Length: 234
Image 1: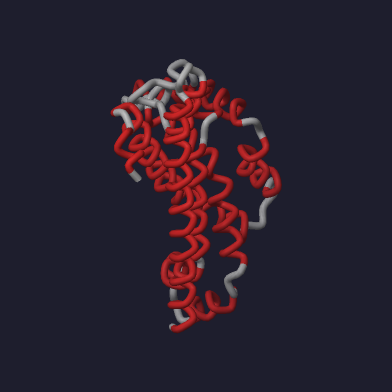
Image 2: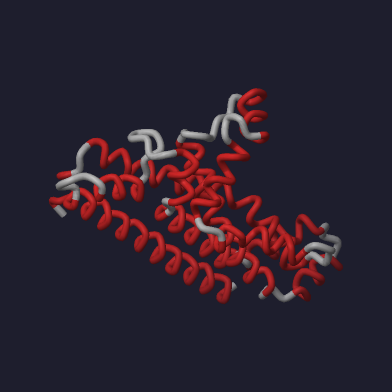
């Protein structure tokens, strides 16, 4: 583990920024992820197939295309980007917040799918029984549905985090590769591969990426199993 001590300040910044970006992307994606998963699992409306396709589009499109679309929409001259910058002072392009947005978009389909499958597995009769006792739909969801889908919610959140940790194409297209601002682990690794003698630095950061992603996935599995066992006991 002594190789960790050999990281330069810029490399440490890339590690910290990646964790920060992935965490923010995951947390910000949860509320809309739950709402969309619920809508796709329970909703009956025209255009549901189209909405499902749009949600999963980032998995199909090349990441560079997704990044370019984000640049068109949320860049300083884009409709959403100009509005947010002018009225709220929120800027995404070439900022770490833009990296979080790109990572959130790329990991969003994985989160929604995991949560949706959990919602579809819930026995609707349990919710109906709570409704007959006078509970309103929001209270039923908060006290019945949400605890039942918690393992899927955890899995979706961690998958989104892991995807964000490895995102490169959309991020570098949308926010470029600026050290200490938008240079995440994948971008830093790419930079090392483009300079002579950068193999050692690229290998160090690659190993760190693998460790962080594996820890996240193992944590997801452990948490989901613990929650599942606790629910079985109750």
